[in-house]
Amino acid sequence: AQMSVGVSKEILLILDRLERTGAIASALEVAAPLGIEISSNDGTIEHRRAWIDLSGRTVQRTLLEEVPNVTAVDLEGRPGTARVAINSAQGPIVLDISRSRLSARNPHQFLVLIGFTAFLMSAIALIYLRNQMRPIRRLARAAEAFGKGRVVPYRVAGATEVRAAGSAFLNMRDRIERQIEQRTMMLSGVSHDLRTPLTRMKLGLSLMEEGAEVDDMRRDVADMEQMLEAFLSFARGDALEDPERIDPIALAQDAVDRFARAGLQVQARVFSGEGTAMLRPMALRRALDNLISNALRYGNEAGVSAIIDDAAIRLIVEDSGPGIPEEHHDSVLKAFTRLDSARNQDSGSGVGLGLTIAADIARQHGGKLILGKSDSLGGLRVEIAIPK
Image (cartoon, rainbow, N blue to C red):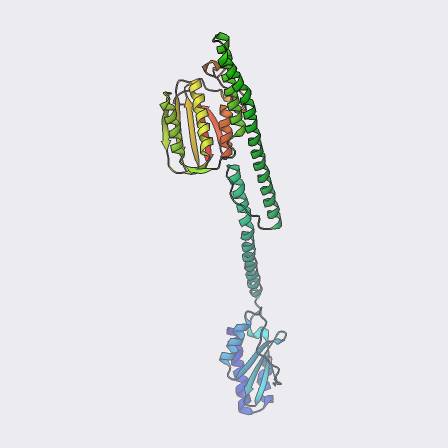
């Protein structure tokens, strides 16, 4: 702006000479040493500047304010030259002034332009990225919920790659659901077919005379029924049960009360936290029943705890039995695995599916089954940990 003000004073000096002498030649004597050319205005001068010429706005404003009778300042007509149209006392004239005298060359203009362009493109990219991340997050939530046993609505959207991933997920989820449904229907038929001969055997035994051999056969049939129920319970896995919003603390307390009413040594130990969660109540009830039954089978008493914190829901069952060595913690979770050396088989009957069923139910909820040693009772400590 200071350079433009200085040139404005020079223009005023030229105009003053022109007005006093009335001759352009006299005005040129002043203008020539200043590097300013004077010519008549042919009417082609327009008030304009390039849109990237940030300092040109200041030049035009200064000349219009400082010099009277300026009609236009053309910064685009001739490269490197500012053409100033003035209505002088001798008629319309044009002063051609080197642009370098009006404003310094400003490389920062390009930096500002580049910065503005970068900011604009970054904003556009951010908006585009947010629009692309939204369907990805929806897909992640749907996959995470399905891993926890919940089916949430999901609609394919987003870029081509995201749509392909979403379609693959929906197809996979449909196949898994169909497989689970078909397996459940098949096992229901198997259950009916296997129970029929067992029922006939029980009926036949009831018609036989009482005796030691008959009693042994009845116990064998009862064991077969128990094994069949355990296997079907494991294979079915409550896969078709819909999650419900329940209170885990109340669920654990109900399990303790049911065993206590049966006269069994089951005690409620630590119950802390509050809140509800989307869970499969029948499946969790069955898992707790299996764990408590195992605890009473191998120990004299069982303790049940339920803890809700910010990270997870923890259902804990402890017993006073011999426990399980740490090196067998992984293998004991496999189906039909029994560690008779560690867990006395004479303490009760079983087919080695109790921990396996509980672990499977924990995985259905996106959690896991953790085995350890009970500090309070000295036996096995089993924890169902379900993330919130």
